[in-house]
Length: 114
Image 1 (cartoon, rainbow, N blue to C red):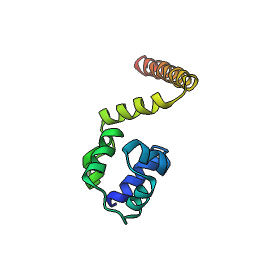
Image 2 (tube, rainbow, N blue to C red; image 1 turned 60 degrees about the horizontal axis):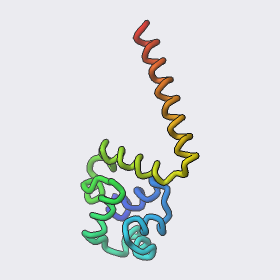
Image 3 (spheres, rainbow, N blue to C red; image 1 turned 120 degrees about the horizontal axis):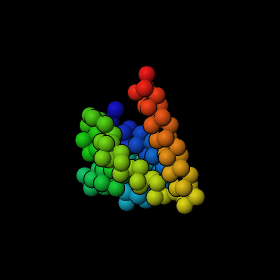
């Protein structure tokens, strides 16, 4: 997979339109279209911006090697996405996480008691 395909994959994995993605990393939608189609060469500055702003592994972005996000990067991605939610949805997510943790604890206790 070429760098342009990885950028498109990243954008789609984040659920962003080209306009939204471009806005976040400081490029115009038309430039992003060209990059994703392989018609525009991606600059060093754009690679650095994507990696920094979206907490993506620069190595993965450049070479395709390793994970798209490291554990730390995944943590940062969660925080970034969570902060974009409105307060009602943030409460829903927090409640869901707490419920999942409780289920996980109970499941682990059952396994330990067998």
